[in-house]
Length: 79
Image (cartoon, rainbow, N blue to C red; front, top):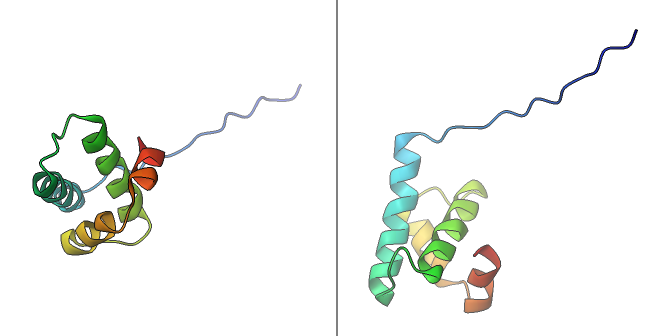
């Protein structure tokens, strides 16, 4: 009798420092624009920052400047 195989995916839990880097960049970006963190734009910025972090932007400054380079349409893609 054949056994069913279960696909197991692993979820990487971010380190505290990684969370701090992403959160700091998003807080700074939202504060500069006077955007609430819980607004659609704030949530989109957070989502974009996570994607940017995962693609290699590993410092607060790098993330902040990368967020600056995104247009409203780019951010809407993340939200």
